[in-house]
Image 1 (tube, rainbow, N blue to C red):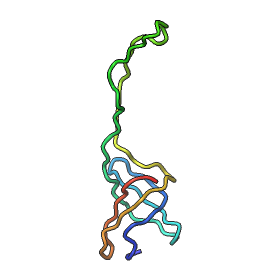
Image 2 (cartoon, helix red, strand yellow):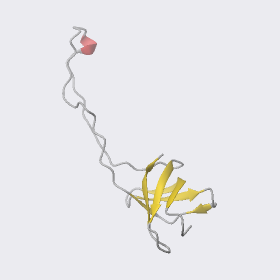
Image 3 (spheres, rainbow, N blue to C red):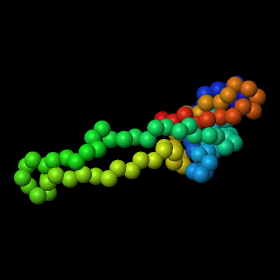
Image 4 (cartoon, rainbow, N blue to C red):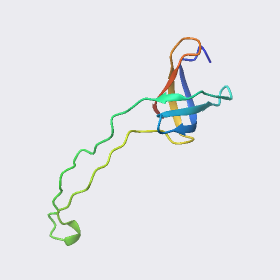
Length: 98
């Protein structure tokens, strides 16, 4: 694995508080150490203000929605793209899901 800088694997364990996961690489039958998950900007919908109905029907009356955002973390068994620092026993990071 020391020559594999970019790897694809499946998430095997999650530590949400530390933003780390362990990834299983099936090509070598190997489980990674804890890898840091990069922080991604939260997704915010394009329109967040009140929307007006316009049809006159009560079910389409003007309304708004509360928005909550959270940082992305992969799920167990989710396929992820990992990047390792190219030194012996270098740290690795999860870049995102595939």
